[in-house]
Length: 122
Image (cartoon, rainbow, N blue to C red; front, side, top):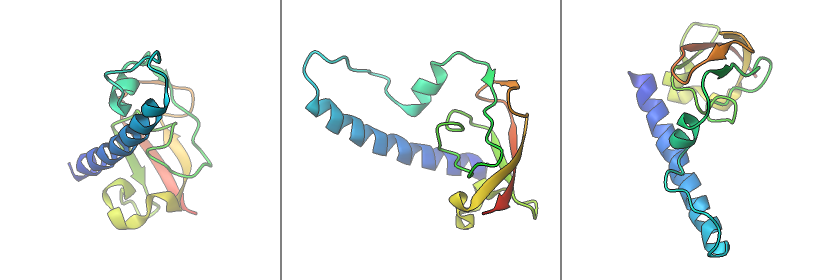
């Protein structure tokens, strides 16, 4: 439950930042540019065709809000000692590298598919 709260808080922060960027960009666009009522990360993710192939994140820095993982809402990121770094605010999410993923790269997954990432420091 804590993981979902952390994910929800981080997602809300990201949506807020993206909304501010979108508002600034929209004010610079001409009046003929289209606007998107449901312009949120969640809406864009849900509008995609699912299932999709699991991205290959192995060997890459762990970034739960990066373009490869931002649409998944059931991620467990396991450190070598077994704790989930998604529920440990002090772990420094960017301080980890993905060693492996379950399901593996290319496997068709949904937004809600449980994804486990094995991590290492660095």
